Image (cartoon, rainbow over all chains, first blue to last red; front, side, top):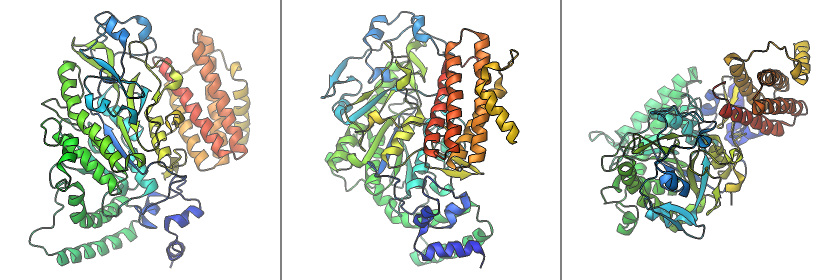
Length: 479
Length: 126
């Protein structure tokens, strides 16, 4: 027996697993493990303790695909209404490059009516009447910034912290650091709602350089969320178990020769997970036992909200069952494929807002009713916002310089608004309040009991972390 | 290597004395980015030797940026941010030597953010 095996056996027999490795310098976050070691020593999805007491156990990541104009949802700007139709004063353009698409049009106010809601007095437009009633659960980040001018680049940065593929998504880092909360379900699930889908595809929920076992698992809409999950009709349960046992032995034999092959390890793990999920996954996403009132809360059964509402109710059920990170991508509504309103923003946002307003309001109310909101972070996010000046006469261009996102639950200070945009809503008003995607990630990790500076992984000799070389916890957002 | 490190360290302190022919190109910015990533890694790995070297090299490179914008004129923000970055990189170096890795990590992150702030103002030049 070689020294590596001795060490491995010692750790296993000591019942130490990854916890024992922490004593030797490894912790999720301090992780001095190579990709191969991370999947060899113990079950890589075994639950791991947070680095400090956590406020949240799970994240529901609501990605508004295509980038909504938060100027038309939350960021009420009377001056924009007053100046609509005029050229934007040069002072508002200072320090930004506006060469995304089509140049700078005249300032544009849409046909919105605005009202303040709740004790916080947060502004909502008429596009979000249901969500407005949940206003006191939300903490707004009105000084959101990012980089990039195209969807695929900025979506990648939103999910992985970098503008080029190859880094792990936030959900993968969280799964790596905390393990799975339910061995019978994937720890990281992606729910898409049709339409354009995620530009860039699976790199947005990839494990990157982390072991492949931490990547996100896409669930489809419909009764069978995972393709080919059901056991073939002509095979008995015993036959299937025998087949899997043989496959496992063969894979372990192969893996002993190539311990650095995390793809094979992930595949082996996925066979077992799939076997377990044959019964658990359909149950987890089966809404037949939910009451009609609950379904109605999410807008299930209504044309515009059925698919997204179904995904959000599934998200609640998944979180309830220990899934760590549920990434929900908004989808097509009434023939409008996403929020990307370069023209006809009235039609686009009326459809898209209709599609998400009731389901998200229902999700927040339902999480609270189930006692899950305090331990679940609900993050309403997008790759960027949209400009206060118009494009094509009826639309808005991309805006990475100042837009709104919000977080609810999970120990976040409900009713608080962080930062602001300028008078016309184009750039953030105070650069010191800027919240970049790295800062959002750092804050989410903090609520999960993880220090973003200490969630690390050795990749090719270099220590990597979720926030690359950036990131700051926005302490003002924490209750 | 040691002599080179000392030289770079001293050069960082005397950044304003960099040649009047100073040039700043994409390579310099790329080198700063690479060194910043290396520094971040070496802090996490608690590699004192490599981390100190990264910090010194960064101080030297930020001195070049500072000198470039001073010479160019009309870029007070860039001069100020480059100076701040140079000072932060020196602080990181000191924290690494004293094994104060947590503080080094925080300061290095602030330094990265300072770079980003500068790029947001001078992206046409960056």
